[in-house]
Image (cartoon, rainbow, N blue to C red; front, side):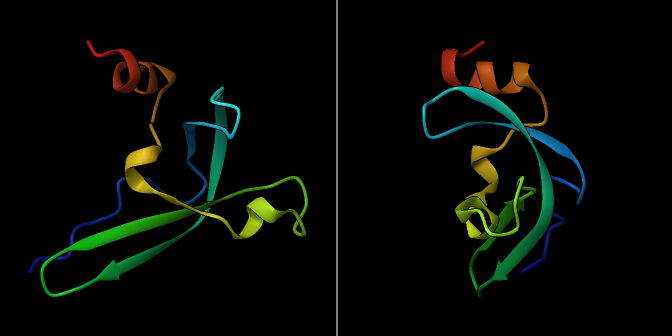
Length: 79
């Protein structure tokens, strides 16, 4: 199996839906890449206002983050 590069870079700004289903822009602080025999997944951790915030340790799947607000809208409403 070929290991692919993550979709986003550390420090990159990404768009996502928050817990209230509102579009928000966040910054990637770190990534975790898990490679198994038949698949690969990437989880991202986002920069938070406080290192003690619960979000500081929450991982987000690559398919839940988007490079632009327009990409996020397309994932919800289609083209």
